[in-house]
Image 1 (cartoon, rainbow, N blue to C red):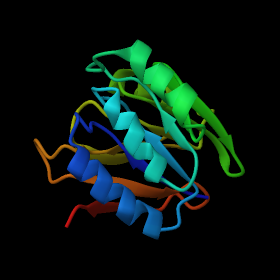
Image 2: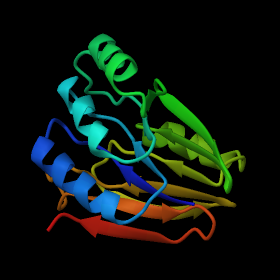
Image 3: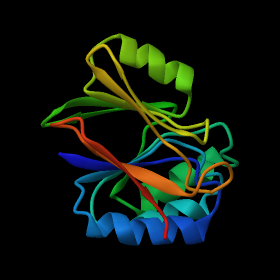
Image 4: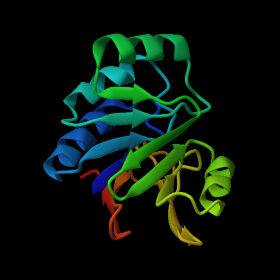
Length: 164
């Protein structure tokens, strides 16, 4: 199963919209957002994704209550998981969070096929025991070019994509 992993959008709607067009063309099964959407109106853009969207909160969400209400009432494909999310797939369980320290702890348990995280705005892929620990970098484009990762849960293959 191939999934797209994004993080740290920080209200950059043009980057998110462009990324979703490209992500849809890649045929991934699900989308994971590792936090820092920031504003509730970012949730609306996920309607453009053709599959399930899994979202955790970051440290910069301005209005979690409204983000939750918008997602739950208007977008059935968007699931908010709180601070940490867990999703069972055909290729094993995935955990995801915003915080790198939480992600590393989850990876160290060896329970997950992959653990995704954000916060640092730096793309990084490493192996912790039998678990892949993956940070897709940032979608906002502050420290690195805006981008995301497509991760194959069956093979562990990861490919980074940057906005054109």
